Image 1 (spheres, rainbow, N blue to C red):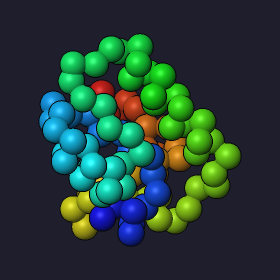
Image 2: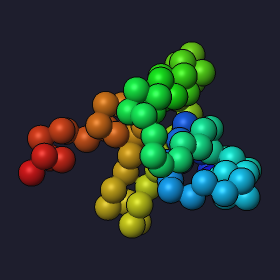
Image 3: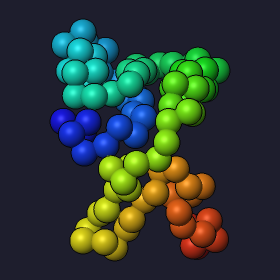
Length: 90
């Protein structure tokens, strides 16, 4: 379960609409579960709601996610994960 490592907000966007999939996603730690087709306005509202819930939360060490033995390090509390956006656009 992802929540053992981090409490970074997670919204699952999927085509799986069966109740068992929705429940599994939420039980794995997702904050919300959105199925296709979806309204872009509704998705934006759901993202805003999740961000409101976590906006007062202080960043924690568990928020930093490391991939591939440190080749990619994401700092979710920083814009662009702590990386220079120019590096990401190249």
